[in-house]
Length: 158
Picture 1 (cartoon, rainbow, N blue to C red):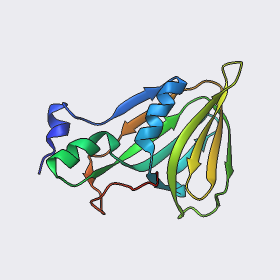
Picture 2: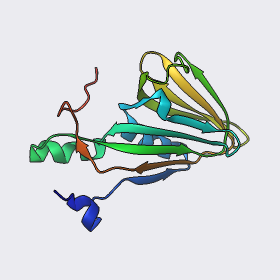
Picture 3: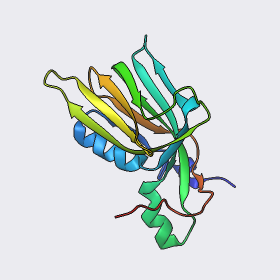
Picture 4: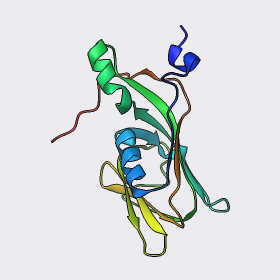
């Protein structure tokens, strides 16, 4: 069965670029509850690029799915962060490539000289901190949406 969203372009794959702290807030909301195995995380020191392939809940489609009474969807997305000078992790075992990590939020703290630190906050008190020379993130959906195996949206405590 064809997916009309990818054929007519009306509701096609998400493609976003973040270059400011306000943009990071938007990406954080879209990436909330994304999951990924450690093996899908890469840092290319020479290119100064950090990439993460995640399985994210389609928060931008949640209301439409509820109204239409159709199952919630997930999609595979690629998060690429440019101008990364260093990567630090805490609370995760980087040697365990099979461990599944859950992304809770993104946070950015700007330095006075245009640099900054982007932190990926993970469930279980884990974190990935990226020292950035400049803030530039790209988020691109790389697969068609598919029905979430649970057919439900992630739940949160208020």
